Amino acid sequence: MASNRSGSTCTGGNGSSFRYPMCDCSVQASLKTTYTEGNFGRRFFACVNHKYGRSCNFFNWYDPPMCSYGRRVLRHLREKHERANMKATSSVATTEPNIASNTHPWFLKWPWLKWQKYMESMKSKHQEELRCEMESMKSKHQQERHYYRKALVLSWAFFSVCIILGFLGGSPSNEKPALT
Image (cartoon, rainbow, N blue to C red; front, side, top):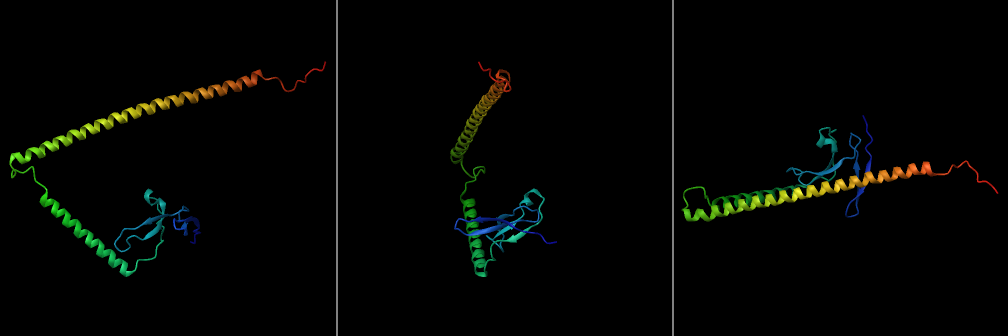
């Protein structure tokens, strides 16, 4: 079954333009980026209904495939990044003190425990401040909402009174003025 895949044209920041194709759902496809090892950074068009579970499985590459040199450089950078992360994680694990263990004397534990208690009190204080601020914002929002609701009701009442007075107080249009 042949489908008509037209779409809308968009202009990029560099002045180039491209067409967003229409997927099989007759919806404009979205432009996404892949982060898989084989196609890292490549962009593609996909059905927007995928996130709602109603996808038509539309897929179309936007970017050309990456050359072999680019894939090699990317793999090298990824491995280097993973090695640096592993090294940083292992150095943090060896330098971080284990306060809970009994290997440290009490005079080393006490400042650490005091610091933890201080941080917990600051956290609870900050949470309380945020809760109070949120409650004040809610009450302010409710007051504004009440004010706007009153204004809306009064404006409709005024409008209704004007319409009624217009019908009752107006002169009949079919009477002709008397000539004297």
